[in-house]
Amino acid sequence: MHPPYGGGVHRFLLTPRWWGINVFVALAVPFCLFMGSWQLGRFEDRVDSHREASTERPADQVAAPLDSLLPVDKTTSGRLASTAGEYGDQLLVPERRLDGRSGFYVLTLLKTDSGKTVPVVRGWLPGAADPAKAPVPPTGRVEVSGALQASENAGTKGVHSQGGLPAGQLGVISAASLVNIVPYDLYDAWLTVQTPSDGMIPVPAQAPTNTGLDLKAFQNLGYTGEWFVFAAFVLFMWFRLYRREVETIRDAEAGLLEPAAR
Image (tube, rainbow, N blue to C red):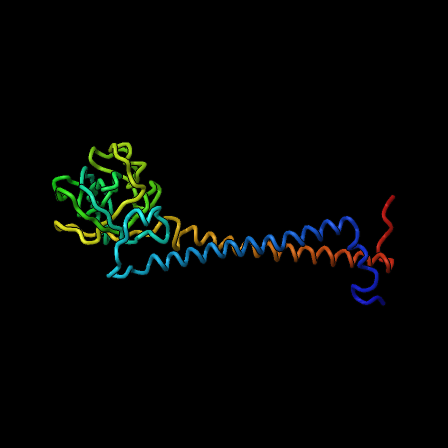
């Protein structure tokens, strides 16, 4: 009686067919493990960014010069930025919700000392967007500090497209949408004042896009499981083919298989 899977029965592993199978398995398993680990890393990065975004900035945080925080990324988003200049055109950003209520942002363009213009959300007011409700911006040179924000995308939750809005209103706070309204050289970022005046409510800093525990984060987690399952499936199929090949050889040696028809 032959010992199970012993002797020279494994010579079939040296055939060209099994060389191809073994090479495929040797490449497929590490690749699946690498992709699974990469997707898991992406999920962990989003968890970390969500935790950082959920952590309030210190109340005594010192504002840094605006230019030193650009371009906006996960590290600088929400940081206090300071700049100086003169306020100019004012726009309203309608249908923005705050604490469960609908209202609008009061956005004023600040022409900075550098010559470039930065949109500044000076505060939020409840109700429908109405220019008569919006406080007039200060005149003369002013120093402004506020939470730095990246340009919005039209697909972001709570952000509306520019189409159909009346004159003097803005749907998306971004240089791309403002360039068609005002003839200024614009920063690709905006500020939200955290201590507004004239009875306006401060707009809290928003987390940067593509971060946090959103649908994409859980997609990364799902892909992680899929890649690890693929690796296990490849190993399972290899073992199944190996076992079938060995059993076939054993049966042939024992004369249990009928000769192949000619």
